[in-house]
Image (cartoon, rainbow, N blue to C red; front, side, top):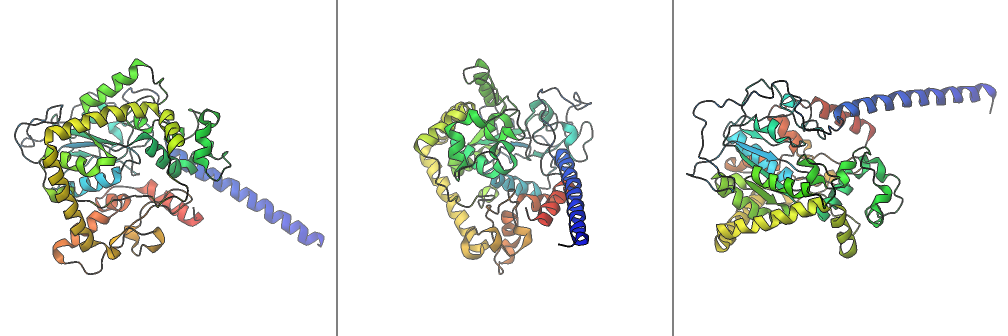
Length: 424
């Protein structure tokens, strides 16, 4: 190769390296803004922490008791949904969006992104257009829970709900979805990284590692507690009992229809209010689901979540017994019939499809980094006027629905633009 051409080649490579380094630095700065550092303490960072929510006169509802029962029955409109990760929470979020939009309720939305600066603890100052004393009907976006801060944004009679999932199954889903943004998984070389990790998790896991919280006791973490506690510590049971005192209903992902029946009863809602299509579902993995020894290992690795789940699994079935088994079976059947009817009316082809097969970008769900594993839907072209609006709302993914509701998502949009440009 002539010296002149060789020199030009080296100059081109040098320029590419410099530009690549600058662009990478920009992305790291952007991401460090978009994903704030963890707060280890629960001290409020809101200057007006003592300013309570001041509900407008006439907003009162029947009194809800801590065990989920109530006096009187009128639709409840003040709701805090502690949105946990990988628990069918996006489906429940859609239900709350629809109800709030239908009744012109006031949402407490994040500012700039689709979560409240997770994994940092929630503070009132993160709410879009927040003013001291402001009162909201519904809070439902991802956050790391801080009860006092949330409590100060809603009326005293607000209903608190959350949803849990079998910890081993949740861990499997979280590992596959968030694994690409958890650097400690990058050293795993097997084709089945999850199985490799579970053979010796202590070898790979660093509790201080970037995004490491996604890979151990994620439910405990989301609820605002230390996910690294010794499972034998008395604090674990104290935290579980605290959750029981604070939340009027804890739903279970594995019994989602039964959970919605209990929720409908608690909130005094109509059947149409809790109709749903499964959103943000992952395409079946080519790697087999956890079973046998790996399932037991995943449960042991997430023992805090396992204790939490066992406690609320037991209390859930006590609520079902109090509701009535036969009545529950009838209402679940009615919900499933109504969902099936809406599926036939709304969904082209009658089922979820891969991202590549989704025709309308407004129906395209957010995808995990590096893959297109989340399924979505195609809306039927010919839907009667009566169901047009409901069908579209039921099928709209979280990000697009937030934009429809007027939420400022500039960070999320910028991150999507960069990902699309780089084809991540």
